[in-house]
Image 1 (cartoon, helix red, strand yellow):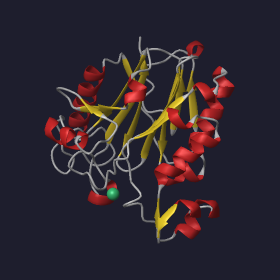
Image 2: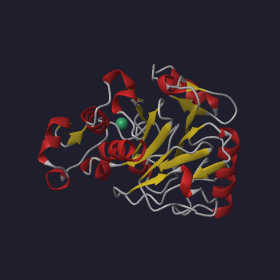
Image 3: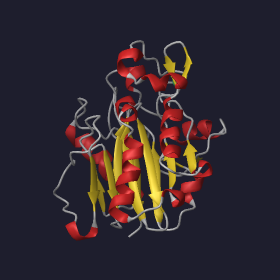
Image 4: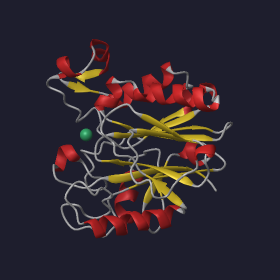
Length: 267
Ligand SMILES: [Zn+2]
């Protein structure tokens, strides 16, 4: 299992592999005191093909009990008292989980594509198989956010809207924030033949060759335009469609699982 993450490591990506249940981390984020984050792979779980093996989505055809076992394994490995998931409808709805509202463990998947919280011990989770998980944190105000961002999220400038939400709800300053863009569809594989009807015309500058777009750079730009500093944005630079040995990819595999990215303010 670890072999594949080691293989990735040798690609000089910014991640570090870890032991037991394999996961990867961003070096910059891992230095933020009081913050925990992890990008899990497709390995180390209980699901059978085509969901092998750490699938965390219950809406892709996998057996519910295996998904539950996988989620439990991740929760134990991550050390999270509580994991909050979203329904992820490729919209731009952002939910803020603040102290005073209290967190109810019976909530289930919240209707959102982004979560923001200042509550310690609540792990925010994105399920993905080509879409980006973008982690945004303010280490000073101690606020963490996670964004499920596919191309629709990019067209809605969801990363920028999440930063606005952090400013509004918790008086966060973008200059203090750090962000990380996880493994997802890379410019090598992000083909959009009908981009003229899908994307705003200003996305044309992110076209790397005919019909192919650099959505990592779109998100990075959206974070910069929201006020983040260049040296505080990390990009994994790992394409899920190219690396189905490590991650699930909807574009490469069709019927497949979803892998997990988590962030939490330590309890
Ligand atoms: Zn690729």
